[in-house]
Image 1 (cartoon, rainbow, N blue to C red):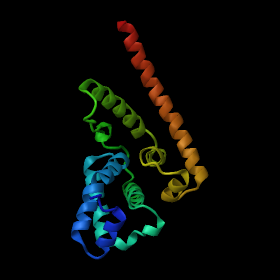
Image 2: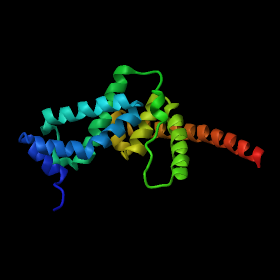
Image 3: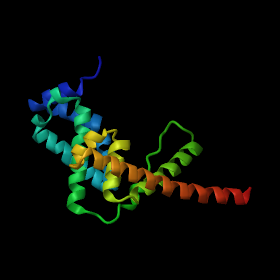
Image 4: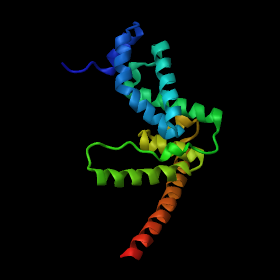
Length: 192
C-alpha cells in the first residue's frame, strides 16, 4: 500500500487526527531541522525551530492550502521564514562553531566520507563568514532550492536585490575557497 500523501495527512490534521500529525512529523522533522541548522548554525537552534514549526502546524493546520502547492514546499517556506524571523530578532554576531559539522552519508566508504566531510566543513565555514543577508540568500537558493522570486518574497526585498546578494555571496565564496585551495595545493606540492 503506497504511503498517504502529505496533503491528505494535512486534511486529517485539520480534523484533529494526531496519528496523521505524527506521520507528517516523522516524514519531515529532519528536513526542518536541516533548514534550521543551515540557517541558524546550531543543532539546539534547529531543534527549537523544528519544535516551533510543527507546534504551529498542529495549532493552525488551516495555514496550509493544498490549492497553492505541495505540503513539502510549503513546509520548507514556513521553516525558512521562521529562521529569518529568529535571525532578525537575535542578530547574532557569529554563527555557532557547529556550523562546520556535517552528517556523514552511510553509503560511501570511510575515506570518501572523510574527504566529503572536510569539503563540506570548508564550504560551511566559508558560508558562515558571509554577511548575514548574503548567507540567507545562498542557503535559500542552494540548500533549499528556492527561486529568486521566492527568496525575494521570503526576505522581503526585490528580485534585483536577491540577484545582487547572490552574486556578491558567490564571488566571496569563490574567493574564500580559492584561497584555501591554493594553500592546500602549496602544502601538497611541498611534500611531493
